[in-house]
Image (cartoon, rainbow, N blue to C red; front, side, top):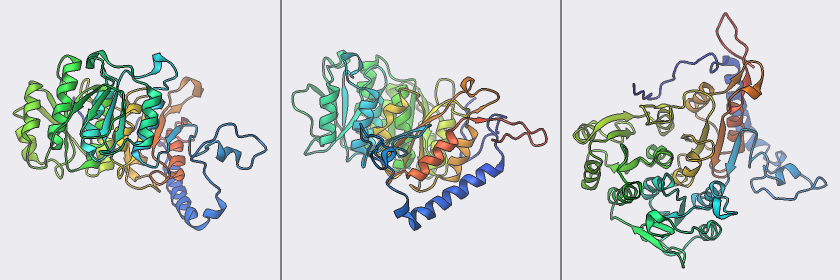
Length: 415
């Protein structure tokens, strides 16, 4: 049966319950760490967000120069771009190292950095069959990070695109010397419609499921990018109280699909949901805030649809809800490697309580030997202005596999 938690906490299993003391300790440490950052910043040293290679032991702050702890901890890896354009370039090369023909993409997707809606919808091209990573461009000039990434990726061309190497979404600058397919539209719904038409053509059929998001609520739409990159399910747009004609047309082309409305009534009204029911079977997945909305989507499962991440042993991706384009920039991390949903924070300096509780719910545990356990891993998108090193350290702690001690009187587990 479908389950959609809206700001609720699921019952904990014996592997998911922890004593209250560690939770309070984490919250206190987070608060004290934030205060210390302001009071004693000169004593902290540089976290090392720009890792260097070849640092030797006779150099001061060698660990920081190598990038630790900001670049990575034992359970996290950071893509430390100062903007989503840089993050997209880095993620594309993390997913496709491009050292040989075998680990290069056949095509790439270029999207304008002025349209988060186009970027979220175009993340579908990361899925099969194109497997085309998303890079960001602008109307007048190809950003240096994007230009360099294209040069390293060297897409050879996709048979599904008649040999084209680039899917160009919108009126944007593109690199010279590459064959491209151009998609457009004069509003978010029209752009998403053209994206869905191409995905349907190359996939050979429309997706059985469609994700509906609001074109005016970016933070609530962000988790859709990760899912469409993994699943190939279409992302289409509605307004709070109306359904654009382009969206209606595409839903009809999907022939009574399962429709999943992502977001609360404040972003997509019940009246819109009622109209959508004429076009397919509708289920709403929501949380009252962008943070809890992303958590609800991460937990949701309905047959083949949904992440269903309610237990340990998963990849997760973290972003700040203020950097909407990071959803598309990092979507390739949700569709490869350890896979996993996009989770959001609303504060660069501390984790929201709801997110802390969710990570506690899925924290791995082991009885005798951690080698026999399962593990969580987190990707962080953005530099320390988006997610501080203190937040990264808290995420690392919450993702860590821990020994379980069952206490009969409380049924709890502790370190």
